[in-house]
Image: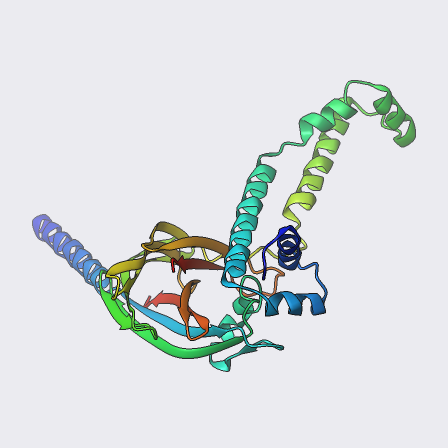
Length: 159
Length: 161
């Protein structure tokens, strides 16, 4: 595929699964080795971003922000008390809200209705190439078809 | 009497250690390495039924650029811990897999492998990698251009235990 901004964008849309079946066929018919390398690189970047987001999500503590918004007897809290009849001691409904926040965080980040991604537990300890460039792509079992994850070591040799 | 019991305990302990050592020394891995030729093809993706277990990997990016996946070789290697096996890839490049080690953790068996692929004409190693993965897990090596396509080497190992 001749590379230009439009073609790059089309390859990106192909990677993201945004093309129609006809457009996909056109892209696939015109794929060059460079395109395949680019697709491999996109896969690697997506894996890195997904890992980074997972790490960030694991570190998020929602409660301080919720507490700031809901606690302290502000107008919102007063309104909530009027609306929901929250007359108990703040400590008791704080515990309730904490539970709700924890449950919300669990639902949002863990999504227990989705089975966990299967992993192959692969750790690449060392990777050396001569006359080639290597990429490592970790493929999840998305969309949860039950197949295990796999790791792809992709080498592109110099001509 | 007490001394005899002590001696018996020592002998028993030594026997257990020797038996454990023998079991450890006999650690063997069996590895399955299908070699696949991926071709651009056209239309519907065709995957050799003999590699049906890899179908889900091969039918999604970054493999969607190819539509024809044929099994053109398969190596079944049995190695002792620390041992290596060398075989030829279809493009006449020697590949060596080494069973570096095996670890057993809580509810998991992990296996450590080293894969080296050489370029005999250029006299260098195209690939030299060491990795650890769960037993039965799959690692795919992609990249050697071969007959209008590329070669895909799948590596999966299990120990006898």
